[in-house]
Image (cartoon, rainbow, N blue to C red):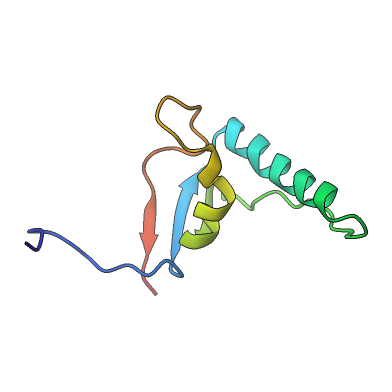
Amino acid sequence: MTPKKSARFNVNNRVRVRLTEAGRRWHRKEHDEFLLANPGVNLTYQAPREDVDGWSTWQLHSLMSTFGDGIHVGGELLFETEMEMIWD
């Protein structure tokens, strides 16, 4: 049965989220762990770019890959629960 309201959205499309402080720490930790697992790689950490209201833009698959392991019921929120979907 098709839901009364639905929209198709590709995981390559972009979303906007507002990271929490825990999310910013998680993002940095992911970078640091990548460098530890890949000696010889020299990448300078770059925090996600946020607009004046704290929104950052991600491809949905990248957001899921970056924060997925840290998202679970009862866990600390890594980004606010409301997001904006972007259709180009």
